[in-house]
Image (cartoon, rainbow, N blue to C red; front, side, top):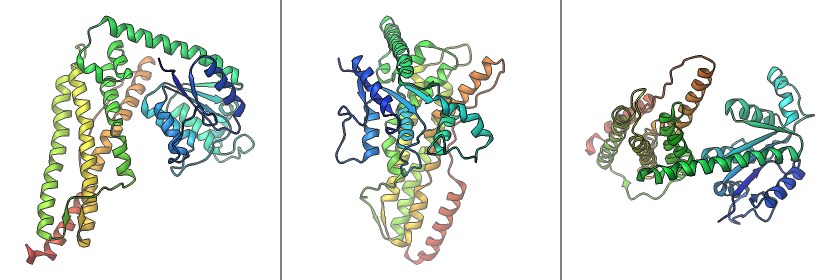
Amino acid sequence: MSQLKIFVSSTCYDLSQIRSDLFDFLSSTDYHPILSEYGTFPIDPDNDTIENCIQNVDTADIFILIVGNRYGYITDTGKSITNTEFLYAKRRGIPIYIFIYKPLINILPFWKKNIDADFSDTVDSVKVIEFVNELRNSNKSWCFEFEKAQEIIAILKVQLSHLFQSALDLRKKIKVSSQPEYWKNLSANAINLALNKEGYYEILFFVQVLKDELIKFESLKFDLDYHILLGSKENIQHPEDLLKWIGEKLASLEHFAQSGMNLMNTAYPFYYAEPGHPSDLKGLYYVASSLARLFKEMILWSIDIKSTYMDKDFLFLRDTFAKCVVKSAMEIWEYPDRTRESITDALEKYIEGEITTVHATLTFDMDDGLSDIVNSEMKRLVDKYASQF
């Protein structure tokens, strides 16, 4: 049986002793610690620092975040490597344990009241405080305080024991019940929601599956974000070919919109039961996985449009047209996190005695501004090349 891989994320210079103590603790308990300054941290020589870090987060089973008084090296995204590692681990859905240096938590109330004050005697950058505030408030993550390594180790002993016990409980539940074939495709988080059946579990199951399926196509989203274009089999040089090409692509665009509406307006209500009745989880799995496939096809469509070779007079139309699905695609991408946050807020208010309605709508539409530009550019080209049609 392979060792459990535990990634420790923090700045190195100010927390070197704590990282050393954690490495010794994790090694002594037969876990596989992943810390960048040790030989157990595998690297690809062809990748840069951040790529190697993300690659190791991608293989980790558990993620430990330790925030001290240094923010660390800031990447091109404007976030530190540690911050980036945390966001990636969160997207992966692996267990995350967060430890924040106690003096940072103590100054948080003062920072909120005096956001422009000088805190250089405590932190190397105010971004550290902003990060802590984001962890505790925006992300609403559970955060442990610490001042010494032994405090972190003591908490981890308890938390890892709980995690192991939860895994055993989940295994027993699966063993004693006859589960359908599609469960083989579910993540542990989705299975846990389906078995425990806690508040809002059906919609939480749906958005968890959607999140899990979307992550499979994250590299395509990155291709779109960073304008990674592949060679095209098409070369549009004549106005008549352009009109035919536009017509074919518009048909696909209409199919995307219709498919999205069919999934959310017809299939989803069919499988999602009224309160008091069990929903069809297999059906919700189908809707979620189909939405993810729709996201994939929309991104591929946009990249394919942008990659097409064309006469230079057609390029503005091509590049604008390629953006037409992006708004709807990003609606699908952001839907799981947005919906989960709404449900979490509703559950917190329910505990406090307040009843709220959760709105989990998904909209498929093209930016009106883009539509106007495409139509205007099409008219310009038709007028200009009328004699060639």
